[in-house]
Length: 88
Image (tube, rainbow, N blue to C red; front, side):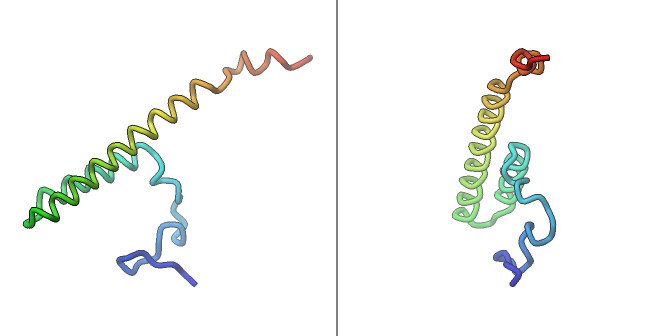
């Protein structure tokens, strides 16, 4: 059974798209930008507010993922450090 998204189309995982794309800082920033753009065109104040909040949440997620990526990268050993324990 193919799982469908709310709009009725198959989700990205079933279409062969990388499912982790949404878990990158760039993807989160893109989603925030898209939501802000949509908010500009909303006639209703409530809809605009919901999209602005969603954009803020995506921007926060992007910043958190960026910090986590930097932390992980800082903890990884450099090739020189990694080779120090290898016996030749």
